[in-house]
Length: 286
Image (cartoon, rainbow, N blue to C red; front, side, top):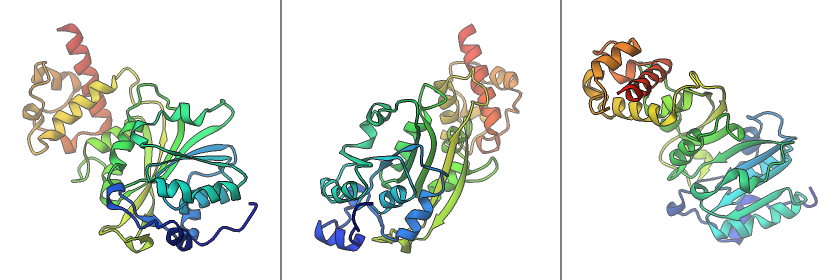
């Protein structure tokens, strides 16, 4: 690092970076905490990190201090883009910041990966777009994806839905999408008091690593459709909640080896995958 950076509270005051609700902003200013988060993915020395919503740069500093080869950040708030210029200078240009909406970003093109580096996403996601971004990264048509891991901050309730297992009230569409072709865990819990301003709820960080799908013959759109139907009326039995799938529901459930009286929350990820597989076969043969 070329020069000592000012404290984050000084950066916030200098650039008038009061958190805006419209951007879903809650800043992490404890550099010990952000450094701990940056270590969750492991060795970053050969990694290009994609960060969303860096704000004044608390996590950004942690990533660079932890040895990330390069950090590329997407930030909608122009005030923060200006504030992060000093961070880029201090870390020999290893930080690149673009003023953009992360929902619209073509990440592989932005990162310009040469094939020699590994890409990872590490972010304290803005609460208002966090789930949408996660689903964007989970539902890529090409798999294995361009990234090696996701280390993401969510509201604790959302994080628990992502890692939930069958039989729990938190288990749902997000659980199935996250677990059918990846492994995921809660890596850290973060109290509301750690943020500025403190949100009304606690947060948690999940760490996700993609893997080969449970069944690589299953089309994403088929899995999404059966899961959406099943959990759309989660209190109903599958024989009722799956109506409207354009195939005989009773025959579909028999082919998948599922009892028609089951409810969605009691169907495992592999069982949902098999259900989607049989749905695809029946539609092709109809």
